[in-house]
Length: 288
Image (cartoon, rainbow, N blue to C red; front, side, top):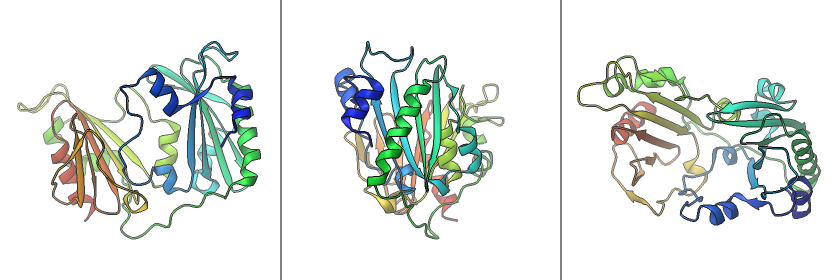
């Protein structure tokens, strides 16, 4: 996506890919996710790359990384293309992420950077978009995978929570929404395109069922992802049998990844161990 010379010009010497950075700074962190089929942006025919800057570079204060994503133009709703046409910054929990998008022919590019920026690093975002736009001439256009009737379709997160009867797990008035945060533009784009929906729910503190603890539940749906890539166990996962799942794995923290052979469902819980129960309910609901 960017040549070494382009990276040096934009980020200064010594920038590293995400894999290189984590190997050096957090060697106990395995950045390679367990195969869950195709990533949502890949289902769209796109690609995403991330680089970390070297300390001491002549860059805006708070700029720690650069991510560039390439989407088919038609996969990105006009409202998001408009919202990101000029550089802007938005909160992401305790960080700030700045973004800028650009249309190039039948492709839409998104450049983003964080963590503690006080204003957009416009020079770097624009330079990254310029470089990737120039490189597109030698790359094939992104083409989304063709959907099939087996692909899941989305309802709203509120409706999904109600259909899953989460009130008996999280309390009558459980909260539906990102816990102490907000959905990021990338998440909104993927959901609008129909390739990933991330819903988060948290317990009703005042009415938690007697046999339950406070929990934050995250349910991720990825239509078509399993049919477009490998679905296999990660190093810390073991196979488990779940009603409705063709294949399912659970890791040491209890997160369950499952597939019906076409789609992928990922359920994680901070608190009660309710992942398997939620997966079974969700698969039964989604298969109709």
